[in-house]
Every structure is written in structure tokens, then in C-alpha cells.
Length: 203
Image (cartoon, rainbow, N blue to C red; front, side, top):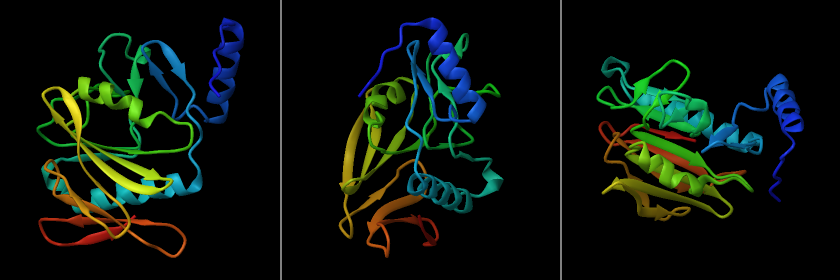
């Protein structure tokens, strides 16, 4: 259930309490509306950590590619905090048009990942990611498990394919990786394959 708080003092109090506890790390602002994201569970954080590690390991540091587990992305240079999103994983290539402004990136990542959690709005971010020039977005669903790869085309992010457990592999055209789902002992795992040299990781 969504809650709209019009009491400015109460809103500020809640935001400050979240900041004091570090619970605001995943919060976002959508066109001036403060979005309090649900805290990611352990499975979510484990996925993000493993995906980030695989991409870091698979991309050579020599080419200055940058991989982040969560980073602020805005479409505004001035007053950036009035409109920003925070993808779970973001990759910026050396030729990226996005600008590093220390607290945020002005412009979208070349490759991003959103891990879907209950009651979050991952797919509602598609228009924003397209507007800031995000080239590809991998969406990870967990109920049921599925992957979707979205690619920027004519200023829109369009789904280019999906994969389910032991069914299909999604290849990025931006980074040298392909992604698929495999059945694991406790949960499905994401196989991350480096298409240039064949190395693979399990996330």
C-alpha cells in the first residue's frame, strides 16, 4: 500500500530517521516525489554483490570501465536530488557520455541491472533510464525467476529477450557478457559468462 504524507514536518522527521539508520541508501526521488524503497533482503543483496563482483572481474581495469553496486543517476545538473534513480548495478564504459559529478552521474549507465523486489517499481523506471541514455538494462525477477534484457532503440528501452531457468541466454551488445538462469540448491542462480574468453561466474 502506498502512503502519501502531506505533513512537511512529519515527512522530514521520517526521512531524517531513515538517514540516521542508513535506511535511505536505496531511496530515490522521482520528479520531486520522495520514494522510500523497501529494504532489500539478503537474497537481493547477495545477487547484487555477486553480479557486481562478476562484472568487475570480467571487465579489464585497463580500459577504465567502472562498475557500481548502486549509484545515483540523474537527468539534471542543477538540483539533481529532485530527480534521480539508483540502479542495483551500473556499468560505465570509458566512452560513456555520462558525467561523474562525484555525488551522482549526470546521464545513464551503459549497462544497468534492476533486481525486482516485492512492491518496488523497477519497471516504472524504464522511461527514466531511457531518457538518460541507459543503453541496456537487465531486469532480474525472482517470483517466478526470469531475466529480461532491455535495449535502447529510438529513445525507448525495448525488451529484446527473456530467459527462465535452464531456458535461454541473453547476450549484451554493450559489455562482453551473457546471462542465463540455472537451478541452484537454495535458489536459482544467474550464470554470468564472459563472451570474449569463456570464463563464467555464478551469481
